[in-house]
Length: 107
Image (cartoon, rainbow, N blue to C red; front, side, top):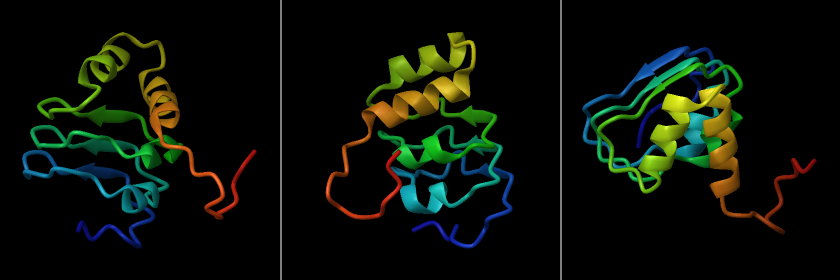
């Protein structure tokens, strides 16, 4: 597990080349001030839906990961007008529905 809990003011996170096969969604989602995420060169296949909640995120480096939706994600990041916002919207749509599980938040 990545020890990210409590790092609320973290602005840049580089985990490139660390053989990670996943990003812990809740931990990443707690990084409210994160502006830059570099996770290139790992073995990550899925991006956590929690990335969609990072309002300060401005840059993401994902290359070199065997992402399940890699072609679509690369197209969004290379050709999108607002690539990070478009990536976040894509992740929201891909997230499994959490009906009846509590947690509130609807909207």
